[in-house]
Structures are given as C-alpha cells and as structure tokens.
Length: 419
Image (cartoon, rainbow, N blue to C red):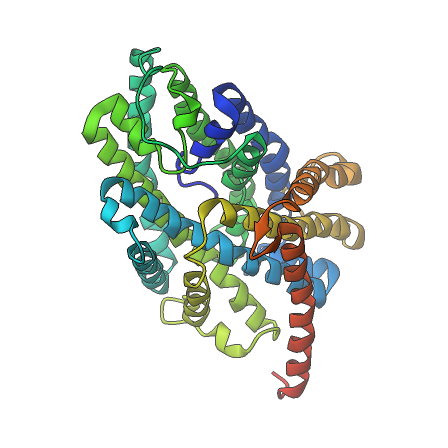
C-alpha cells in the first residue's frame, strides 16, 4: 500500500542528481515516514477497528472531524488511485508505444481499474496473495541492476538516451519522494481482518520502512556508478536504463515489473479505501447500501462506487496527480496526529500495546516534522496551476467541500428513518 518497488523514483534523480537523490531517499523516511509509522503503531494497536484512521479521528474529535478525515482520504484517493493506471500505461508504452497514443492509454487504465475491482470483490485473501507474488516478481529486475551496475562503472557517461520531458526540480523531487513514502495509514482500515493487530501493526510498519528505503536507495546508488546523466531520467525511464545495462531482456523485465508495480499498488489500495465508506455506513454516516458485503465479506458496493470515481481522473498527468495527492493527504494526516494527542488527553487509560515513547511531549513532537514538510509544500503549491487555479486554492476548496458534504449528510440523516 506504500510502495510497489523502485518504480516512480526516476524524477527524483532528474530533479536532484544522484547524490542529493540518495540523500532525499534516506532522509524522507526518517522525517516523514517514521513519525507517521509510530503514530499508526500506537493508534492501530489501541483501536484496531474497521475504517482505521477514520475511526481514530471520530473517537477523538467527534462525528464532524471523523467525516472530514474520511472525506479528505477519499478525495486524496481520487487523485492517488489515478496515478497507478497512469504509471501502468507509461511503462506499457515503453514496450509498445502504440498504447500511449490518444485514447488507448485511457482504455488500458480503465481495464486496470476493472480487473482490480473484480479481484477485490473476490475477497481480501485474493488481494493479499496477488500482492505478495507481484512484489517478488517486480523486485527481481532491480536485484539484477544492483548486481550489474558496478561492472559498468563510468561506462554510461556518454550514453545516448531518448529526450526527456520532465521539468521536475529538486523541490519537485522531494515532493515525489514524499509521495513514494506515504500511505502507511492505509493499512489501518482493514484492522478487523488482520490477525493479532495489536502485535502485527507496529512490527510490520517499522520493518516495512526499512525494506522500502532499501528498495529505493540501492538501485539509484548502483546506477550512480555508471555516471549516466541525471537528465536522462524521467517517469518510466527505468526500462531504458535497464536496457543500457542488460540489453533487451532486462528492459522487458523492467517494463513488465513496472506494470506489475502499478497494478499491485492499485489492487491493494482498492482494498484499503473501500473500507472507509463501509465503516461510515455501519456508523450511520452514509447510506446503509455502502455496508453491503458479498459472501466473501467484501464491501462490493463501496468498491464499485469508488472505482467509478477513480476511473474519471485517468486523464490527468503524473506530476499534477502527485501534487494534489500530497496536499490533500497531508491534511488528513494532520488530523491523525491530532487524534493521537487528543486521545492521550481524553483517554489516558486506553490500553495501548504499543506506545510512542516520550510521554505527551513525544506524542506532540512526533507530528512536527511531517507538518513542517506539508506547510512547505502548501506554500510551494501556490505556484502550481491545477484546473486554472493554484494548488493551494484548489486544495482549500476541497477542504471546504468536506464541511458542506457533512452538512448535507447530517440533513439527509435527519430526514431518513432512524437506523
């Protein structure tokens, strides 16, 4: 749910160069991911409920803020989930350019959405098994790159590569690194379906931070030995880089791995996001139809409705999707850190199998660095144009829309018979 391997890191190298890209990939998990993981470790072990972060915020701050948490997460998902079919098409087009022309890419993206929707309706075990095998397969080409690159030391300094269209700078590279390291809270929404969640979540989260960082840093560090120009890097270029190292077979392996990565991320996140409307419907905050499940306990109505919304955003570009995603996701993440502090005050006796060290100071300080990073990118987003307006204005409208949606929801609930 956080990472589908090294794919998606190319623009970081383009914007920052090798040395600074490696530094960004090492510091981002410490400043951005680790505080989030510790927060989720405490809250998911204390409150392992279906809906995860929505349930935490609702319990800490009431229905209105719980609704806003779910709203922001689902709005962020609209842009986040459109990224993965986009990446799938970008890698497919590296192998078969025909698919990248005109409407064909959108049709391929729709096929990805449709297949993953079907797998999720089939149940959580199908999604889990698929994800494990995809991760193993897509990681294999990067193991080969790490092994081959030292033997090409300095050999690619004058390599001729296809012209790139990326305009990402070092700040944009950091933004993309944040996107590559975010999404840890998505695992919390299926807590009821996890064995021994109080023990499993903290251990799995910390181990995953280390594993994800390794999968990002090692291939980039290995490629730095070849002296390939950073300007040759852009989203999807791992395929061409693999071709320079290992010829057509490795290039094909990277393309297939990139497609598996995008597919696997989308597939796992359908499982996560679909539990939000399901949990809200159980709480009476959405119509009961969203709580319907099939014989495999999959919330099929929630899955189908969300998949339809995700399909509508397939035409947006990768960099623009990442910008919107990080800004909106950041607002929901802030509410989660706030819920951690509020629950420490209002429910000091709540059983916490895993607890952030440092008492109240530790819990409060935990959210400082991620919040500062978010404030920095909100300020930067004021210069990014989305739908003819700045990212900051667009994000503010989405936040305001959440309160309007809550007002409409309350009105409709009062009009409905008691449930």
